[in-house]
Length: 406
Image 1: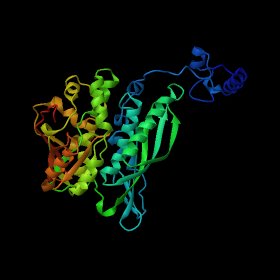
Image 2 (image 1 turned 180 degrees about the vertical axis):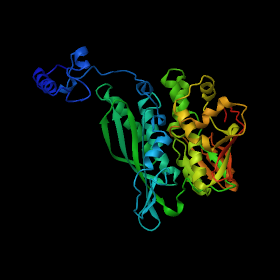
Image 3 (image 1 turned 135 degrees about the vertical axis):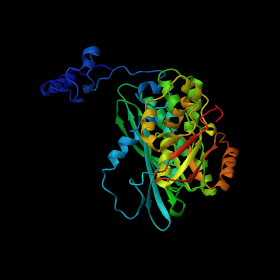
């Protein structure tokens, strides 16, 4: 692209007079880009765009749901927000559930959520699929049906080829179509890092809302997807995970929780949440605290990705694991200390993880077998709910041995 010298002179003249670049007030004028490449991006000139295959996980600092703000910081900030007083808000920010629920007429309610994060795989189309699957998952976790979505994209358009953003959106649309959810608009921003997500609106019957905080003593806990996506994405960022392992993780993340949600209504689930950035333990602790119960987790029954044992052995552990563990440690009791090296899987930030469902004991086996018959081979009973004995509920962890088969 040839430079328009008159435009460059006018733009740079204004920047020099102000003492700042007019496009980025953090930079002086002339900026380093101009000094090194003789290109003034403020004047509409562009650096050569990176072409060819781009590994998306290498372009960001933190991948997937590990890029989200930690529970401790988020809770502290949200605690200072004013309360919502609208009587039609059934579940709002105070509840901290997977999605908000707003009463419309009769038994019909609106259910809404939004989710945005950085790439967790290297392929743009697959990343778009995962972003969409993750966004509609909060609707599914409540027992709702997604109807419409708005895309939210951050993209370094001056550095990466626009076809990458196009592929992301195409992947998202494909997955939304699979969910029966229509993309009706969106918003984009020129950002330093790639981000993609969707604001999703759905419908739900008030009598069928499955909240996170209604688990009952005697319930059985079921997890519908394998754990380990955070570790695998982190390993991919630093070049320590095979393409095959990342592909396995990507397929899991891109799969919808639609069947799991529909079946949990059929099998009379008491409570549910989707397992994402706060990890299995973070989301379970929120469930037991909100429900006023205890839980017991059998780690030997956890479904895990095939490369999780490699990640644990080589300590391919994202920093979000420590943040998640620190936040929930007061409510976790490790009763089997034989394999401390396996404990990080409990705190691994998941991207587009499975549903954690609390069901009556007479329904749990039927729920699991039904999902397996639909092709969800990793669904597993992982624990149980029981009455709490103290003032605070707790999660008790037993059998800390892991196997690749879950």
